[in-house]
Image (cartoon, rainbow, N blue to C red; front, side, top):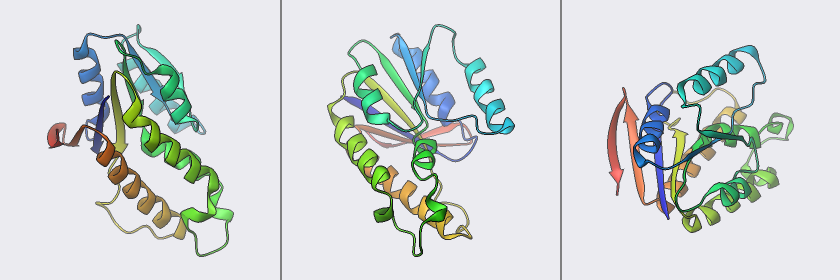
Length: 181
């Protein structure tokens, strides 16, 4: 296992770092993309990410079932990028705004199952795995209960992934800061 968590804020350079590390590995690359083009702005972001990647890289779109996709795609001799864990978390929390207050992860059984599956599989995966995630806890406290739940669960997810990954890097202004490994 060679899992590397790459954290940073929006437009910090975390995806670029993951792509550089994948390119430098010299291995075939698979990108597991978790974003969904639910509006024109997100469709444009996805388009720009696609254009930035080498055409030979394989892309697998997986908005929710991340652990099974990782188990299928991770192999010795292949580098896998997951971009991004935070969007995957957002996909899992879709619909939570309709849940009764107070909102808690306990109200989201699919989220809990998928999170457990991911944390269980990452340490077992062969080959280099680059997990890209947003660090969302450095900003303002969100106004809504769902926003606060999302921020809290993203922070918990990042902590749990950092614990099972061999390497953790924080990226700010395009500059990587090694936190672990």
